[in-house]
Length: 77
Image 1 (tube, one colour):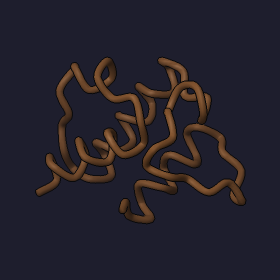
Image 2 (cartoon, rainbow, N blue to C red; image 1 turned 135 degrees about the horizontal axis):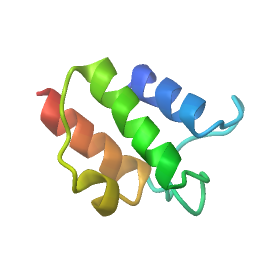
Image 3 (cartoon, helix red, strand yellow; image 1 turned 135 degrees about the vertical axis):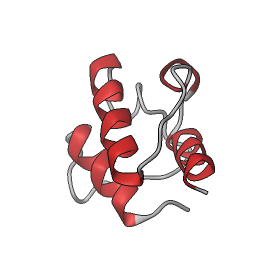
């Protein structure tokens, strides 16, 4: 579903354990503990890694791992 770069950045910024299985359905905030500051850090890191610029609405609109990945993959195309 998502690539290893995306997963590595998410895992690092959210401080997730290596043995945690990340799925698209997981809620970034309630299940993975990504608060608003971590979300902004996550977006900045992803924009840099993929050489893209996401809209300001992304931080308010995305709820799940899959939604965030879709935003990244659409911009990276």
